[in-house]
Length: 109
Image (cartoon, rainbow, N blue to C red; front, side, top):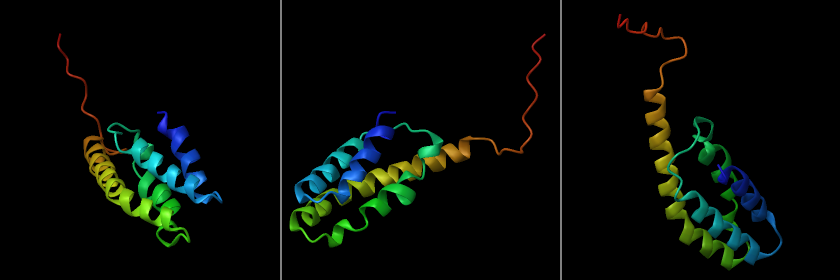
């Protein structure tokens, strides 16, 4: 997944000195994450463990440009996080428990 390379880079830009760079990185990260429908099970907790902590200081950023950009992106980010949560819960239910016995294959002979 390309986003596995792009998103960490964009989130690293949130600590840049330039407010325009921080705001731009936030916009692009939001647009990059929004269309993702399929992701690896290892990415299921990307929002609570990685993305939201990286965004946590933006609502108190000293620059108004960054704060207003955050305000315009937060709804889309929340919707995307909700979709990730819903899909990861579905994947967890669809996946057999690690120690549950599997059915023997059907003998068709």
